[in-house]
Image (cartoon, rainbow, N blue to C red; front, side, top):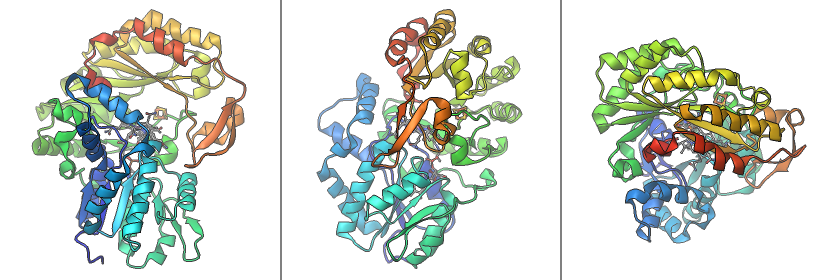
Length: 470
Ligand code: B12
Ligand code: SF4
């Protein structure tokens, strides 16, 4: 066991989102603590945001713009002085350091902080984990960075517990499932995935007390928001998405267990708004209805936002209960108005049914926010015309439309069978993400959709807080 004051220090790297906290570290921290480990946490994301803010920018009405600027800033441009000071401050706390890498933006800083840690304490152990990693990127990042000792891919709970229990003898790391690690001869072992947690109810509730909640933008501006996770994975099988590969089969928590966590977080942090980060909250509509009934009975004064799948099976009765239980916003991934593109995406929704569902959601008092994918492979002008027609005819049932350009995700069906989807893969970039190109070239609709489609929606009526809570 380490002579330091903590068995591990977990860190949220910059550049993440600063509207409200991310849930992974609070979840992992409470799990490790329940098993008797002493866990320190450092939110370098918020620390750097405060540091950058102190050097110039203001808050107030500018908050959302500021967050976007922060998100898109160049991560490798993070002041090395900040990193050095941060490492100096955390080094005395532990000899094991875990970074939660959500996306490519937060990887470069995590690597440079790891190398700073190793320079100051060559005996320290650095582990990366998080949504960004799969077996390929885990291997890639390890092989290119000697200051990283191990990379966890997939669900983190069981693997992290094993790492800590075996840390006394590092050579045993090579046998931990869900982990890529260097073995004694310097070669890299990528072990099989760890089994998924069977019963999510058995996990402890996320412990947010380790984060500086008051520093998050929504909290500063008066809205106490926390994320919650009621399920893992999805019932859909969209060809561009990696959720199933990451999380296995759809695993919901029981409504009673979710309610207990909501009551706990509301009491502990006086939370006013919850963001369900599930891939979808209506994967099991009977469970959702039961959860709403429990929330109504408990008379909780909390509102909530979630992602949902367009489904005609969401009855008016269910929607009314959701509103009564505090649901104010639903995000729907529609992605395209073209039946052909939706079929390529294997989205499993009939575009003709979408307006009726949206109308009923809004009638129940819930705002309809939508995700759309632009520049999708095989897109032709005619497909974009379908999407614009959809907005022209039905945009009044939409409160906000968010457009993001197509990205090829590893582990998705499109990555596994590129030739079937109009793309070809050239190799991997420096962080282990695919280098790919369109084949054939699609009709690029990013600009036209972004500039024209929102004109037909109710967008201006939406407060900016909701937009920030994607
Ligand atoms: C909510 C969400 C967001 C919110 C986050 C807001 C918030 N404060 O919570 C917002 C809108 C800001 C967001 C933004 C983005 N997101 Co997002 N997001 C999600 C979503 C839907 C849920 C995240 C979540 O709460 N997951 C639950 C936690 C518990 O899962 P987790 O982080 O993976 O943690 C587990 C393991 O990874 C591991 N683990 C995590 N940290 C660590 C650390 C250590 C040391 C160890 C050992 C293990 C470990 O253990 C955890 C428990 O099992 C996921 C999809 C999903 N279902 O996960 C996408 C997802 C994470 N996002 C994704 C992307 C691409 C993005 C963006 C880049 C989008 C964009 N183009 O701008 C940005 C990046 C933002 C940033 N730089 O941080 C991708 C990442 C894919 C990838 N391979 O990189 C995902 C997986 C969606 C997808 N399938 O495409 N996102
Ligand atoms: S895109 Fe959304 S609905 Fe489709 S599989 Fe992924 S999480 Fe599920």
